[in-house]
Length: 292
Image (cartoon, rainbow, N blue to C red):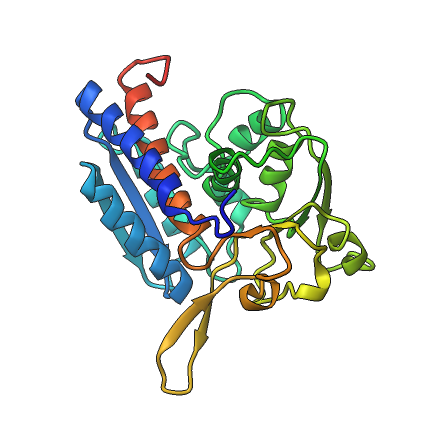
C-alpha cells in the first residue's frame, strides 16, 4: 500500500470511465450548477467542476447568484430546471445563505437529476442498499479504499462528522453488506464524549469535521489509515491563501500507515464522481435502464 493515498489515479480512472460512457452513447450531458454568494472553499470546488466537466464533453451552466436571493426565487429556479429536458443534472453548491430551509430545498430537486445525492429519496435508497445517486464526497472515500485495496470489513472505523452529505451517507456505505462495507463503525461529532478514546482505537479514521488540522498525532493509533475529507482555507502572513485538511498531515505522517493529502486527495475524486453521475443521469434520461 502507498503511504500517500493520492486522489489523482483514482480520479483519472473515473474520468476515463465517464469519457468512454459519453463517447459510446453519444451523450451531451448538461449540468446546472448554482452557487449563492461567495465562499472560498466552494469557489475552489466549483472551478474544478467546470474545468473537469468541459474537458470530457459536458456542458456546465454555471449560475452564480447574489446572497440576497430569496428562498422562493431559488425554488423557482429549481422548478424550472426540473422541467427542462436539456438539463440532466442539478447541483446546488453549499453553504446556503442563513435562513434557508435546506431540507425543503433538497426536496425540490428532481431526484433523477440529483447528481450530488442529497434528495431524501436518494438518501433513503442508499440506507436500504438500493441503486441511487450517492453523495459524491462519501462515495469518493469508498472509491479511495477500493483503489488502494483497503477493506474496512471487520475493522474499527471512526467517522468524525455527521453531516447529511458526508458523515451520514458514508456511514450507510461502510455499514452496507458489500465488499467495501461491513465495518465496525463509530460516528463521532461535537458532542461525543472522550473523542480521543474513540480515535486511538480506530484502524481507519475519516475526518469530515470542518476544522483545520483538528486531528493530531496523539489522537491516532500507530499504523492507522487516515482519510481526510476536509478542505479549509488559511490566509498566510503575506495575504496569500493555502488549503489544509481536517487532519494535521505533518504531525500524523510518521505515525500512520497511510494518509490522504489535502489538496490532492478526496476532492479531485469527488469532482470526477459528480461528472460521472451527470453522465449517468443523461444516459437514463435517454431511456437506458442500465448504466453501461
